[in-house]
Image 1 (cartoon, rainbow, N blue to C red):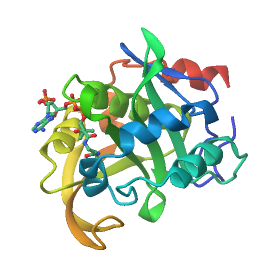
Image 2 (cartoon, protein in one colour; image 1 turned 180 degrees about the vertical axis):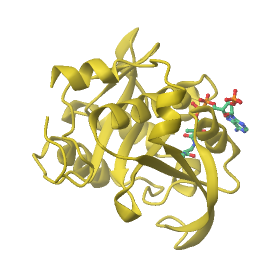
Image 3 (tube, rainbow, N blue to C red; image 1 turned 60 degrees about the vertical axis):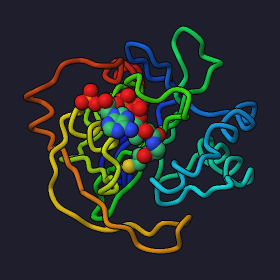
Amino acid sequence: MHRGDDLIGFEAPREPLLTRRLFMRLPVAADLAAICRLINDPIIAESTGLIRYPYPVMSGRKWIEAAHKPARPRLHIPYLLTLRSNPHLIVGAAGISLGKGGIPTIGYWIGRPYRRRGYASEAARALIDLTFSSSDSSAIGASARVTNLASQRVLLGAGMRRVGTGRIKSAQLGRYLPVLRYRIERKCWEKARVPRSNAREVHEAL
Ligand SMILES: CC(C)(COP(=O)(O)OP(=O)(O)OC[C@H]1O[C@@H](n2cnc3c(N)ncnc32)[C@H](O)[C@@H]1OP(=O)(O)O)[C@@H](O)C(=O)NCCC(=O)NCCS
């Protein structure tokens, strides 16, 4: 396991992450059409910084390709969210990116038909477990629009605390939007640690 000089601090594991119901895996070219169908949603575009509506197919293609490039340092580690009971059914996506100040940040979206089933919460917890188990990061961050109550609930439920406010540039709306910033410190995660995914096993297998 390489540590220290990667910006995020670990290579993208090739192994899928398993949670109680999710099978989180790297996207592949064959997923493109299904991803585009789900992500092509104005709510997703208005809730996130970089995703646009209508969603350009080229953006999806680039996102998938980037997942397989041996980039170092790796600035984004993407996961496609599928179900353990049906790994062909895509329900959303999530990822870890390098935030300002070198802090890893998590993000996610869930396709409209699959919301309110706890999938974002499961994915967020798995990403937090993976990041802390596989890197030396002292904290993980996230942000949510002030109007995005669902995302705020996801972050609080995953053990994050609200630490302030900020703004993100919305590619969709072409302006800055106010956001709430969240954070979880490694020591809080360690204290409350309940295994919620196989992140530790994935890390140890590397
Ligand atoms: C935000 C989003 C990812 C939540 O996904 P989800 O799988 O429906 O979330 P969960 O089912 O895990 O629900 C998490 C919590 O939010 C609550 N919640 C879900 N949808 C909600 C809504 N529309 N309004 C208020 N609360 C909501 C749930 O009741 C749950 O609360 P609890 O933990 O107190 O029980 C999803 O709505 C989405 O993809 N939105 C568009 C993209 C986006 O906002 N991405 C995040 C950018 S910061």
